[in-house]
Image 1 (tube, rainbow, N blue to C red):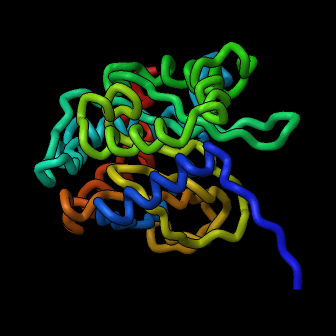
Image 2 (cartoon, rainbow, N blue to C red):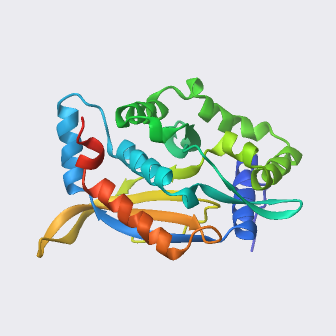
Length: 261
């Protein structure tokens, strides 16, 4: 039997710290919802045919930003300083998007914070996401920050880990109010999962045709699997369900967020 060992890269160490911090200082609970986006996708395509460049990701960002604005507990985060745990509630709504790009060296994931996203219109959100996914990587500060990680000494990543869990100002300046993935995929076979997030995080994932009851009849509809993760130390299950109901209305009924376009 043989094997090789290697040290973790700085990027993997940062992820290791994130998961360790989540396990030790937070109690994430994940609710997985399934919503019908058939009408929403049709509405988006009709808008794009008219030259209004929106997409499903921008709709989901706007929907989650609206929910964050309306729910103070979702904007509240648990911190742990030298004197023990405390809560901090943020006034702003800023989304920390996880962006996936294909590169010559393989897939690259990097975070990008959209500041005051609840105040942006959905077309502006779509333009920003499009820029993050298509602009040359060397022109994106967010991508360059990830590449610079490999040169950061371990002592600084440990200091960063402490500041993230103990200093609300340090946290909000770097990570925004909540997180959301943009790495949706089609027909992977995924039906659920567990995601550890230290605060409010949204995980849209599988999109594809599924049997669904519409007006009492079984039909094939385009469905999205959508995870809502909250810290159970801050929010309880009933709040999570209420958030799911609000998001369902905003995402399944396109007139709420797209009707003015």
